Image 1 (cartoon, one colour):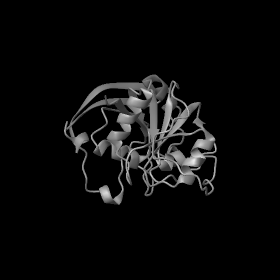
Image 2 (cartoon, rainbow, N blue to C red):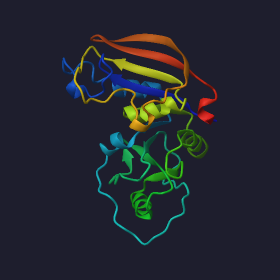
Image 3 (spheres, rainbow, N blue to C red):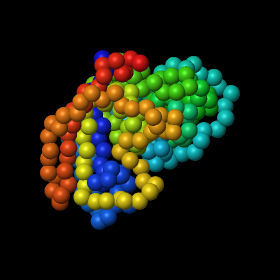
Image 4 (tube, rainbow, N blue to C red):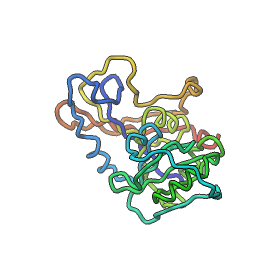
Length: 235
């Protein structure tokens, strides 16, 4: 059964997500972790670019070892998992958890064996969700069946968030909205796309404002329920 998927993001009024660029500075930037904890996900997911910001290691060295393209888990009994989309196996972790949450990397089958050896050596779990591109619906299915994930928080960069949105997999959107403006080119957005997906639209049929919550200092938490075309995730 598909997990319930909540996208949680924090943005300025113009939809930008790097607080260091916002003016005025420090506008409600301490709320993200608090709301993350309140939402109570079994796992959270980020993309490769965001994941790289947490990495401490270097690319893994070459090896002669061969590994089957099968899911491998260093741990199955965690309360919360940190899931990272890394299709081509670019991240050398140098760690096995983020904030105490065991890392689970989502790969494609064309990653090198040296990367799998490195992940195993560091105790980093991994799953395969496609031959050359990640199938997000398959990713959710594996997380559900293998790790019992029922509630997933999507908290990636704009490209990862946009991929989930266009796949019709997001059920709820929680936006922490700060009274600040970025106002310049180059900052990431809450939802974005690669050039290849720039003309592909999300299959959203309705969005309902479920609640508006004042967090203080002009910061709002907007909660929207999303209805998607039921055929979207199966396409």
